Image (tube, rainbow, N blue to C red; front, side, top):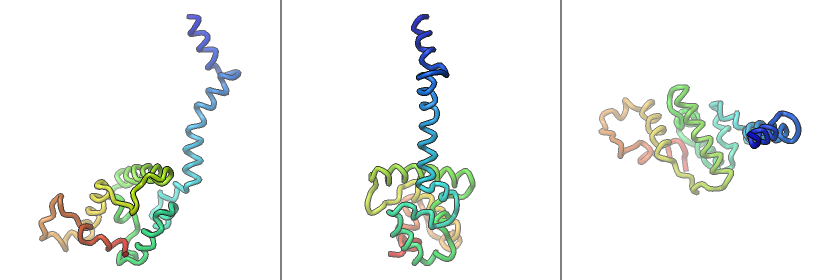
Length: 156
């Protein structure tokens, strides 16, 4: 019982315990919010392709997109996020987290490589717009659009 009272007195609202408790509660959200603001994370909620170049490693991809045949008819999100509100923002959250960690720590492949998860999203986006054009082709899981058309969205 005495240990419980000591423990309780450390984590009460007053004194050192209160300051510690306040720090424990406010520091993590403050860090997340300030990082989100500093990295312009809010810009990723839009469809503006310029949001992707907040990270300098994406500059070449953005310039390649500007030269591509899809520049006037699509945005980054047209090809790189799935349809549906929940699916789109779940994908943005997953990729945002992975990109944030990778670009902050420097732990990412160069040249950048698309993951299987994102390859499926891009392939489905191709078929959404061009499905009728290729419906006679037997597309299976081993064949995807960007195997042959890798430079359509990002000219080299």
